[in-house]
Every structure is written in C-alpha cells, then in structure tokens.
Length: 352
Ligand code: DON
Image 1: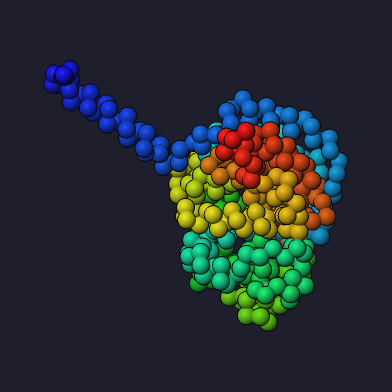
Image 2: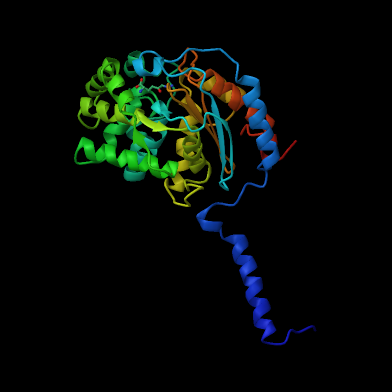
C-alpha cells in the first residue's frame, strides 16, 4: 500500500483536516450559501431591468395621514439586494434615509421573542390576519385575540408593551440598539417624522385603550404608543433595510457583521407572520403572486426575505389603498420571478 513518509504525512493529514473543517464550518459565523442561489450576473440584471421598467410608474400616492410623509419626494426610488454571503446589488436612491414605519414591527416582534421566548409572545399577541386595514379598530373588537397579529397597529403596540424595560426610555434605547444590530449600522430617529406622527396619532391611542379594555396590552397604553411612534420614525436607507432583511434570510445572523442578532429558532415564526400579514389586507394576493415573506411601511419601504439566499428592499413613497408601496411591490414581484425566488414554486429549490 502507498504510504506517505513523515513529516509529510502529518502535513497531508493537517491539510486534509483543514479542508473538512472549512467545509462543515460556516465562514465567520455565516450559514452556507444556498446551492440554488442565483449568480451575481443574474441578480444584477434582474435589479437593473426592474429599475428601468418601473422607474416611470406613476401609480399610487404618498401617505398623508402623517403630514411629514406627504411632502417626501414621490419620485425617490431605490432597490437594494443583500445576499446571505453579503454581496450587495443596488441601484437608484439607496442612500436616502426614510422612516421605517411598519417594517419596524418585524424587529420589535423579534426583540420581544428574544426576551420572552416565542410561545408567550404568540399567546399574548397571536398571528391571525385580519383582512382589514392596518389601523382598524373593528378588527380589535372582532378578532378573538383582539391584538390579532404583531403587524397591524394594535398588535404592534401590544408587542411594544410586552418588551421588558424599567422605563419607556430604556425600552426605546433597547429597540433602537436591536434594530441597529440587524442593520449592521447605528440607526437614528428622524425627529421630524416622530413629531409629525406624535401630533396626529389619535387613532393609535384609541387602539391602545381598546386593547386595554380586553386586557391585551401589557404596559401603560399611551407610553406604549409613544415608544411605538418612535420605532416607526427610525430612519433607514434601502441598503440598511436590505441588510435587516438579509439577517432574517441568514438564520438571524447579520451577513455583514457576522453577529447573531435574532435567535435561529425564532426565524420561522417571524417569516410566517410576515407571510400572513406583512402586507395587511393584501397579504393573500401577495402570497399568491410573489410567495415571499415581506413587510411594508407607509414610508414607502418594503423588504422581502428569501430564506437562505438574501433580501430585497425597495423604497418608493407612493402607496396603494392598503398602504403598500406600488413600485416596491412591482419590483419585488419582477425580481422574484426572474430569479425563481417564490418559495411555493418548485423552481425555488432547483426543480424546473
Ligand atoms: O402607526 C402608523 O399608522 C404608522 N406609524 C405605521 C403604519 C404603517 O406603516 C402601515 N404600513 N404599511
């Protein structure tokens, strides 16, 4: 039999072991790239085509019930894709900082589960779609759980109320730090958005008291609304938002920093809630046409998560009737279709 003489023998064994280690151990804490993830050229082409195809789309209208949002330039348009191996593909106004709005609800849900565990959060909030507008008081009355799910305003305010803290300021700092870890950069409040929303959020205050009537809010109602209003006023750009999404796609590990931000076991709960209610009363249509967990915000952002592969974030302020960015929905549907991202499609796992 062929035998290697020492010291070469130990060298060969060491190299062999290193090979095995590199294969089984994720590099810098990241999960392995999905074997069916599309290559760089395909992603770049899909993003560029979508940008050109939809940049002149004039559908929808900026949100105006928060006065600040009405005067944001409706032509702003940016697309950013971050892959789980931290590649970046982007085009357009990707450095403009807009208010995260309802997309924040995803990360406050994650934080609540981080602190309390998933089951208590599910018991106290629920995860049923309402089929009604995101700010509907009727849904609070009608839904058996009242809070319905963490993504309608009522459920989101209840989720904020659950996050343990000794003061509203401490809670707000905890939330902002957590979002920053998911974005891989320090995020800050857009003070003008906060002031604009705080001066006009009577509807959310009403929802918080309605929740109190059913014992479905777990801290002072108005204090909870105030922290919620701040979380909605956090500024993000499309790149940061895509990285926040890619953290969900990458088992809770931020692909840029390698930090485990969200517990891996919580990811399926978060993504299922996004699929059920991420686009409010048009979530069913979204699941039908696009098949990706996503979350929208009235600031004009949408982030869609492709588990194991990455995330697409789009920013374009004009919204449809349900409060979802018109261009962002079109772009994500186009890119998802081009790159076989729809989770319900056999093509997403390489079956043609
Ligand atoms: O509470 C509100 O109405 C806003 N801060 C957030 C609503 C929102 O983003 C709904 N999204 N599509």
